[in-house]
Amino acid sequence: MIRTVQITDISFDCSLEDDDWTEQDQLETEENLPKSYIGSVWELEVSDDADDDQVVEELLEEVSCSSGWCINNIDFRYVLS
Image 1 (cartoon, rainbow, N blue to C red):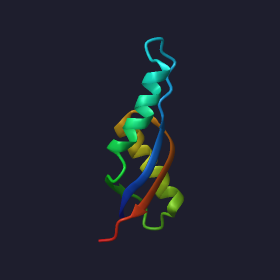
Image 2: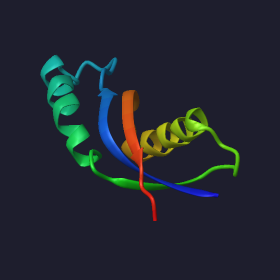
Image 3: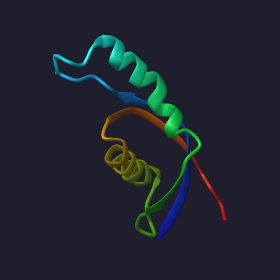
């Protein structure tokens, strides 16, 4: 089953253990990266009996793979067709 969701809010963990990555880099990325995802629509393939927790898990996986960053928090709404 395909569930369509729209991200309404998201925050990323942009901390890195890298000498070239500064605290300023982290703060700027944590501020700017969500702008690329808030409002975006995702089609998630989940089982017919998937509950909200399973939808969240799939959404976290998809967005983490897309962005390359871990997610601290994500909020979404279902898009009805």
